Image 1: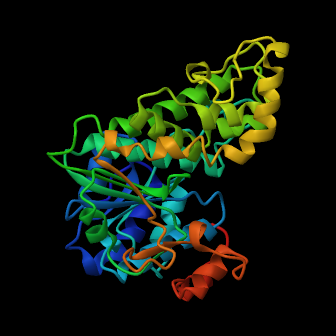
Image 2: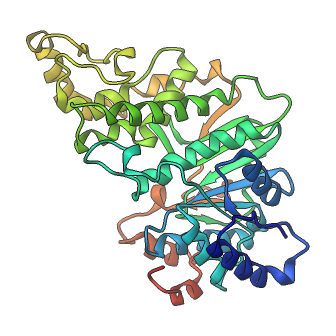
Length: 380
């Protein structure tokens, strides 16, 4: 068993807790620690990727245990299909992993955390996301890219915690014979599930897609720190799902695409004189021109305000998302399952209907909630 040594008493306590928890299975590698350094990340991947596959689950407790419980439930669910040992759990901090080590309900071999973006100075003024879900969204895509860069060969699945697994997902994903499998349909992508398979025959630039996602997320975040035009209402500019959809569209069409991030996230600004970050690099599909005088944009602005909500997931997106002949190593399919017998899972975000008022109710209704987790405390 290995736990990365960090010189302080709290980490020593964590070491003791984890050692006791996993003493009976000491023949397997374990890792609990910070993975900001590449050496540590590789040790965590060595522990999780025993067969070359890793499942990345990212949660941030923010003082409460509910998100950690849902992660533990997913790991328990994966254990029943023989895949819990592949999980690399990425949390918001050492306190989260201490809770994971101390509980005795679900065994977790690899629990990690990062100090990335944990300061208010890393975020827009008046929009401190250092203790919010946005931070873990940033970090999971940051580490998805970092893991792919760190490994020459790997099968990497990023999963939300509201997924019910009915079977081992890797045979199905590998059967598609693609380097990247994205979850969704021609109307748009849902990034609750992303799979990348890096092997010697993968096109050399395939995984640049995730480098560009990480670059844009960083660019929008840093540009807003010194900007006087942004406010909380523009935070969708750096919404991870918008960015991934834009990058994939650009990747398969070769045309600069910032539509969802810039033109939806900044629509209310009017764009009369100021451009933000990379937003001027992509034309508005309805003719709105960044930097133009207001009267020049009046008709385009009217069209944008009235018609974009009708077409943003329709005619504008659909042609781009069906152009994958240019990138045959990428597949878009409905990984959400939703009753499809060929997909060994279901994603609550895509499948839940009005008969289930909450995510928890849906998971219990699907018999994929581990009720022993209900006895865990609600706060760290």
